[in-house]
Length: 271
Ligand SMILES: Nc1ncnc2c1ncn2[C@@H]1O[C@H](COP(=O)(O)OP(=O)(O)OP(=O)(O)O)[C@@H](O)[C@H]1O
Ligand SMILES: [Mg+2]
Image 1 (cartoon, rainbow, N blue to C red):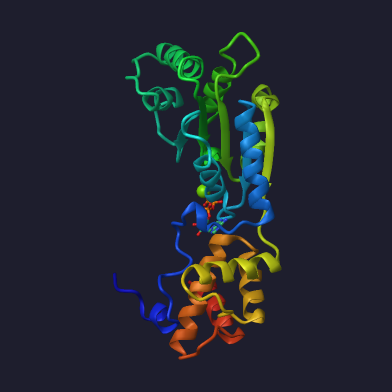
Image 2 (cartoon, rainbow, N blue to C red):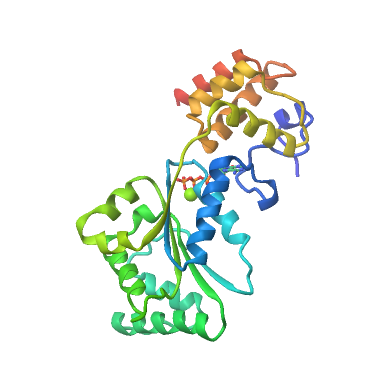
């Protein structure tokens, strides 16, 4: 595959700051590790966990990394990338993911989901982990569906672990009156914050090292400017870093200096 001129300019072996990163290539900052530890805890307890964070803070990367590390022999992960599936309910998704054909009526498909979830644990000895990404988009009706599912067993054990991942508004909607019952079942909560300056600098180095340049390619003052622009949020930092590398390559510079960072920030702000 042909790489862009700026990638070649810096002698990078691949385009850095890409969206797709292998689990082994993740940047492991403290907050990331804490998020992963809490997700493991929710799974081990068959509880509900909530991970919130601003847009681009690394929630999906952290949750995907955590569930990828679960033993597939004893876990069945159902990953819902986006819950806005219109009239197709959460139950339908669960039933299909567990290999059955969803029945037509809602009451039936709910009973079906309950039975299948219980069977997965009791017969196949696999814990179902339902991850709902973009969970701030869950409608009140869907939150209610989820609440009913956690309720379905007469005994205390919940038939699955649920991880709700979303923007900070999710925490607020869960606290609202009608969902207090669901909120009480949440035993793990985590707010993934942006990185501090030192983490942002290590993050930039990490991604550049993955692309074959472990040496500092971005001057510290430039990195500090990119960090401030991005508020320490990984996705915004990716965009700012790429724009600054493009600016540096365009100016024929071997390093990203503060002038390049300034240019990058200006470009990203006046679109
Ligand atoms: N731990 C990490 N290591 C390396 N890169 C990361 C890490 N966390 C985030 N990133 C980078 O930041 C980008 C955004 O992360 P992610 O998609 O997880 O954010 P998000 O919080 O789920 O955003 P959204 O709210 O838009 O869903 C990723 O595509 C990746 O490039
Ligand atoms: Mg996400």
